Image 1 (cartoon, one colour):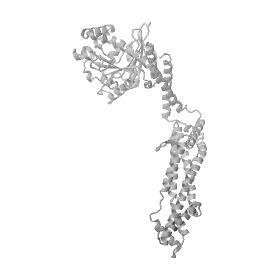
Image 2 (cartoon, helix red, strand yellow):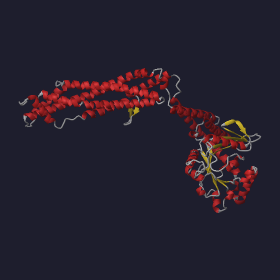
Image 3 (cartoon, rainbow, N blue to C red):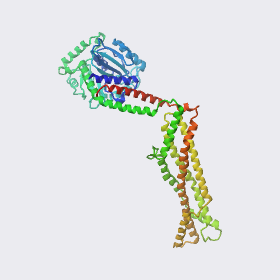
Image 4 (cartoon, helix red, strand yellow):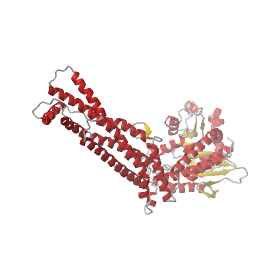
Length: 601
């Protein structure tokens, strides 16, 4: 069974050595929590049977201390070593205490601040059972001395990070000479583990408890809802510490106390029973968790490998890298505009760039052109135009000059919505480009900026060509009013026949106004429909096809300058840090995978 604990210890060492957090795999562990004066240090020293922890006022434990006890037969003495210095063995546990203090000050500074950077102490003994415990800083309410003002929040956040691991066993240490309803350890354990299924309560200083019915109910587990049990212990007094009283004598004194005052519970009280209980819990829990742990390690390994792959390796050949990224970007744009790559814009569903452009053609262009309405006083304008072109004599037939003048006025109004339609197409393609640039060149901020600028400049150049072409097209419509247009002549004949057949007794002038108005409506609709056809074709010709064809050459020409290539492929600091973190975590997970393969889960 100890093999399972060795595996867990080795996994813990792997993550801590590489400097990465094992949170993602949720290692099974026993986490010791309690207030500053709860007696955590005495409990741990009684389990290890050595005095080795720093003591003093305020927060003494300022970093998580992972204590890994490994039982090895045949050892002549108990010794320890630290994961941060495996070259040195410690046989004197006073020196272990000094090293804990020294390394804590090195990492946290000499003040009373805390830091979530674990110290791992490995103890080898033929006297002690294999067991791993994580000792955390004691909870405090009020900053004392040099402690930070938010020390309570810092400490609670660190404790929660460890005990929120669903595979952790919470060892909640509370002193027996206080009202347990106010115990900080019980309170935070209950908050994280409401049903108490992974909480073991330890009541210290039982010799200072009032011997009442209530205290017996506490030790019987009837007052505190924890399912792993409640164990009472007696702390070493100062005289025992000063006189270096043998651990056997301390345990015998503890046993006598419980036999005398809590005889029916005595076999489930005391430090020796607590040690056996913790070993049994951790061993069975580790065996139960390992199959799921193996799956989590494999899943995390795949995830981290994916991150490493997406970030790529550090650039060795700038020219090749730039060329490859330009090709990828141009390909992504081509695929998006041809309908083979979906992309999510700020508004609307996730569609291909080409489909987004079609929606602009199908919606925005029609809406912009439909905004051009005939003026409310059109009849007055027609009458005025007829009079000005025919003089004082009444007009017997539909006057061509009046019609053409009025048609030109309406055609001129179409220039604004045409420009607006092209602008909307430009904005949509610009958004597609921006998303692709951000995605493809995220590693290289300088290259991303240059590609964005070059692409936008090229797009704007193509957009200007579209504007010029369409304005020339409108200019052509203004120059020649084609009254011989097949659709116009057909509808004109129908309109004039309808007016002849009409029973309206309108004066000749009013009848002519009505006819001209109808003809204007026919002709402008023909021009509008032609624009609805020509705008998409022109946009796609210049702003999509020509743009695609020129994009790669433009980028290569401007970006393959040897003087600037190194600067272009300089990665952002966040990318370098992200790759380093992912590579470290991947290394840890690969080692963890190798370790778990040693066991048949």
